[in-house]
Every structure is written in structure tokens, then in C-alpha cells.
Image (tube, rainbow, N blue to C red):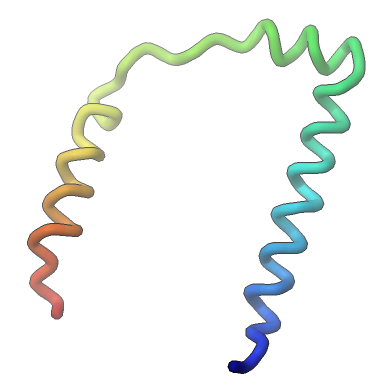
Length: 63
């Protein structure tokens, strides 16, 4: 088993980004900003993407 360096750096990078987001959201201004965000209405793409994913994973013709 070999170590994939790019995967390691990607995992470390994702961890650092999540720590930064947690740090920003931890103070009072960050909590106020995050609480002001609203969930978007259901869009057309939100309805289409599960269907496309189902078709892609169940009928993948490239294999």
C-alpha cells in the first residue's frame, strides 16, 4: 500500500478549511452572520440532480 500524497494534502486542506469556518462561526459576529442565513427555496436543479445521479450511477454506459 502506497501513500497518495495529493490525497493527504487534500484531507489536510479540508481539515484546515473546516477549522477556519468553525473559528469564524464561533465568535459572536460569526454566530449572528450564520443565523441570518436562510435556506434557499427549492430550485429546478435541486429537483433534477437526484434524477441525474440515479441515472448516472445505475445506467453508467461508459463501463
